[in-house]
Length: 185
Image (tube, rainbow, N blue to C red; front, side, top):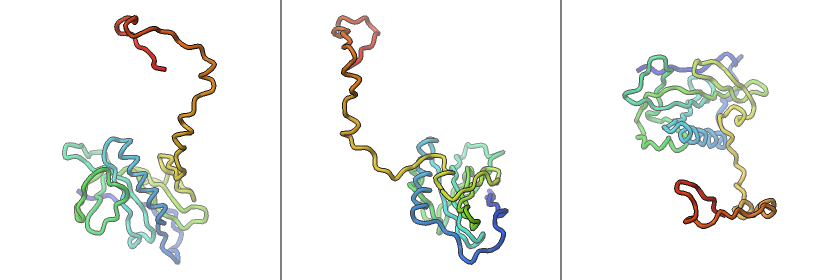
């Protein structure tokens, strides 16, 4: 199966003096996005960083491995993995060998840019540029935060309004009709 290369170069007016590359924090965020997509979709989603050698900038694609019974007609397909592949995140729970290649459904990609105020460009399944920003979080499908979760003590504090409510005296379980539910206090 031939892999499609859905990267647009419309925004690149000239070859930059430097090669735009993802930072370690950006790579971590992209990996966590692939993990969140895997959980959300209920199937593996792979994220692979493509080297800047061919295009002059790095880009990351997101793709879902195809099952042998999946119908590929009408899908944009890519190959993910292989020798030297830079896969991000936990790889959707797949145990991937260093030279293993997967035929995948292309979901979307993030390419880097050298335009002023535009570091990231999102490319959809048709290869169209659909969003551009200087803040990667703005074009990701989930809000992933590095902020710590609230302490459990904060969550377990009683609601002050609950004390003002009258108690519901529903009686013992034996006094209830079959099939009815009871709330625990």
